[in-house]
Length: 85
Image (tube, rainbow, N blue to C red; front, side, top):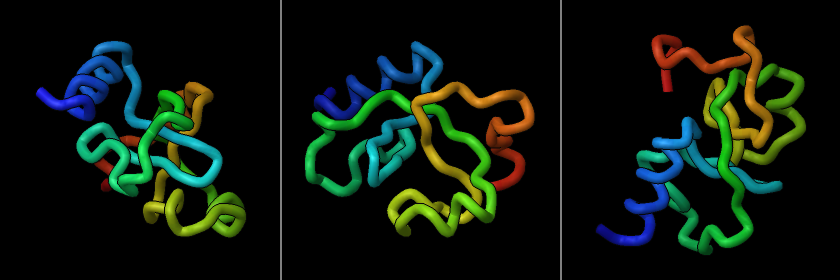
């Protein structure tokens, strides 16, 4: 196991969906795809992104319908995997 695999496993066991920082967000399936390292990233939860939020963030965070955040989403905000992504 490499460091990314260990990190993804640990985050999943703790109920997180991925990593996030001020400029970026990624899923556990591909942690830190930017390859700039993840020392500034925090554990994150995947949630629905509103159209207003989509205009406020750069394309790295905008994944079509979701974003990563350090705040646990409410039931209405939680991203439903059936919705895509």
